[in-house]
Image 1: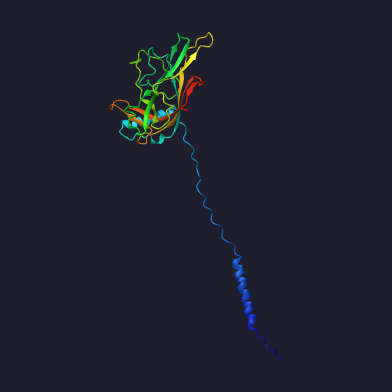
Image 2: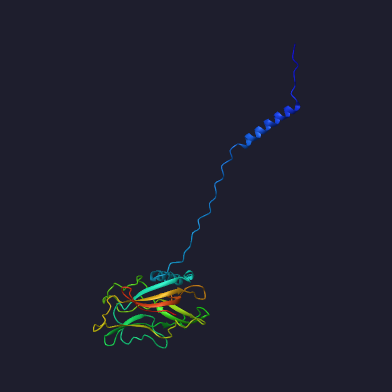
Length: 280
C-alpha cells in the first residue's frame, strides 16, 4: 500500500529561500576589498634662507654686469641686490705711504680712498679715510627724494677680485706704467632727511695712529692695510641698488652702489682689528 506524499509547507519553502539569499549576500560581503589608491604626496617644502652676504668679489661682479648692460643700452639690473648685506675688505697702502701733501678731508670731503702716511718724524703711522661728498653728484642726485646726504667710498682696482695687495710689480717699460687708472666703482653711503646723524662724517676723516712701542719705531707694512666696509645695499628711486653713467660710448661706465653703512674698520694684513666706527 502506497504512503501518501506530504508536500512542504509554504512557510518552510520561504524560510529556505531566505537562508539561501542570506548566504549569497554574506559571500558577496566577504569578498576582499580592492587595494587603496596610492596616496599623492605633496611636493617637499624647500626652505629659502637669507641671501649670502656680498663680499668684494660678488659686488664687483654685479657691478661688471651692470656696467656692461648700461653700455649696451639695456636694463642694468641691480634691483635684486637691494636689501643684501655686504662685508667688503680691500687692501690699501700696498705701494707705501700716501704722497706728501695729500688732503684727507676738507669742506667738500676727501677723495674716498684709504691711505697711510708717516707722522711725528717717522715715530708713528697714520691711517686715514676721508669719504667724498657725493651729495650733489650727478651719480647720486635724484636717487631718492628722502636722501639728504651721500658720502662716497671708491673700490680701487676693480679688476682685482681678491682683497689683498696686487702681485704685479711696476714695469717702467710699459706704456703709462705710472699712470693711475680713474676710479670707476664705488659705494655711496646715503642718509635720510629724518634719519640719525651719528653716522655722518661731514668732511671728517676716519683716522687711526699706529704708535711706536717703547723705543722701537713702527715699521712700514710689507702688505699694506685693510679697509672694511660693512652694511646693507639700498635702492635708488628706480628700485635698483646700482646706478651707472658714462660720458661717452668709448669710456668705461662709472657705477655706484647705494648703501646704508653700518661699520667702517681698519685692519692689518693678517686681519687683526685696529680700529672701527659704528653709527651708534
